Amino acid sequence: MNGKTGTVIYPFFMENKNDLISGLEKLARLQLSEAEHDKLGADLNNILQMVEQLRSLDTTGVEPLVYLNEPGEHLAEDVVSGQLPREAALRNAPRQDGQFFRTPKVK
Image (cartoon, rainbow, N blue to C red; front, side, top):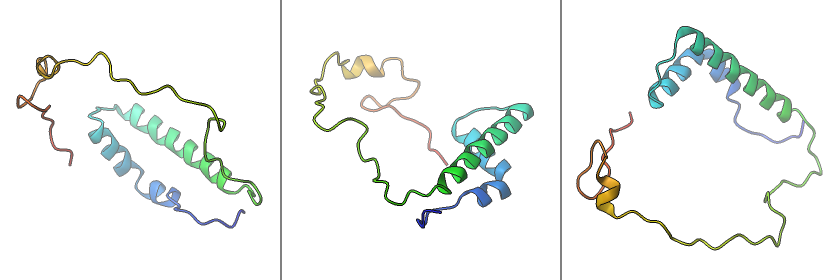
């Protein structure tokens, strides 16, 4: 073990798997069949098992990765281009108030 502490979500997930999947389904506005629901649960279990395997590795003396790019690599400048006028962007919105997109509240 690496001696590091972290949040262990695996036991929580196992106890409340159906509630978690149902909540994700609602947030994503999906309607999963029972087979899809079961497959998603199995996939999430596999992911969490892989995370547990990674947590068990001894990482003593291993420097954490801070950047994915090599130091000195330069990124392109952010340049604003191809903007739509507000009216054009809102034209086909199902709900809008003339200035912003209106979305349903997420519970």
